[in-house]
Amino acid sequence: MRQLAMVIDLNKCIGCQTCTLACKSQWTDRGGREFMYWNHVETEPGKGYPRDWKNAGGGWEGEQLRPGRLPRLHEDYGYPAEFNYEEALFEPTEKPLRPIQEMQWGPNWEEDQGAGEFPNSYFFYLPRLCNHCTKPACLAACPRQAIYKREEDGIVLIDQDRCRGYRYCVAACPYKKIYFNPTTGMSEKCIFCYPRVERGTPPACAYQCVGRARHVSYLDDREGPVHRLVNEWKVALPLLPQHGTQPNVYYVPPLSPPAFDADGRPGDKPRLPENYLEELFGPGVHDALATLEAEIERKGRGEASEVLDILIAYRHGDMFRLDRG
Ligand code: SF4
Ligand code: SF4
Image (cartoon, rainbow, N blue to C red; front, top):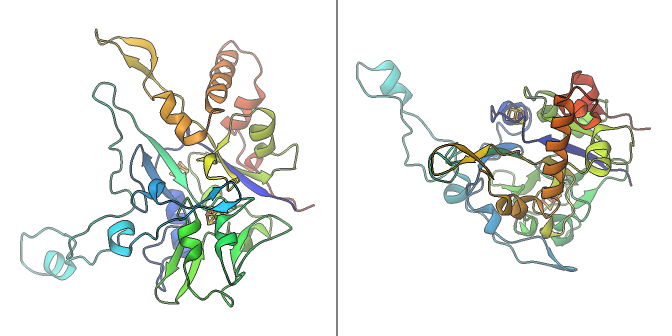
């Protein structure tokens, strides 16, 4: 089985949500999908979307599926609001444009809040999509065998003819990246833009990324950016690998500015706590950050650095290798 995979460089993501809109306008803007974000970008640290997904269970404990809970539509996902357009825009009133219902949560509810005390407060952006896992808990949890993983590219899909909307997959995914569509009564998820991929065009989120933060290639393509960054340089790591699903979206972890000391001067400790980054990306995060820092210094001395050249992405086209061989 081949595996198409993605690397997202968190040092280049600016949280612009272009990827989110590229996905939403293409796949989830109607038909019961309005609340779904197959791709979204959340602020870390934070509860994220759906709310508190990191504590919702799912994934594997050895060879057993770990129980997970279902996010609730309004409380955990949030639902697109109706606004007082008539009143605010077409009537002689000073009333501002506001949602009509009281909203409880939504994507980016806590955007840019982060954590820490000024001047050592910190945050970064974390784009999230289905990881098209090598050991997908969603697939294992489905009693209808409606979820399958394609041999030719490892993309995980839901057969809409077989799905009966039991939602075991939603509970089982530790990333909460499968959604139940209340209009169709079936579950849906990111399809890694397979109709584009089959034509040699990258997924919309990656192709439209203005930060040039996303690389896409097959893991076994030794010249591809994903193989170079994940297997050769080991600077890109899966999110929450402890869930055991073996994700195929990898992240270049965020480098930290120095924390200010008691005199208000930049000290020698990083502002982003490294134990927190280890919780997110596993123990390999320390070596990955050390490699990145060493390579930045090399580049600064005018020496060659393959890994930085890949990450800088001088040419957009070099970020994607989708030749199906
Ligand atoms: Fe399944 Fe979740 Fe993995 Fe996607 S991220 S393949 S939905 S377990
Ligand atoms: Fe980040 Fe790129 Fe998405 Fe913008 S388009 S939020 S830079 S991943």
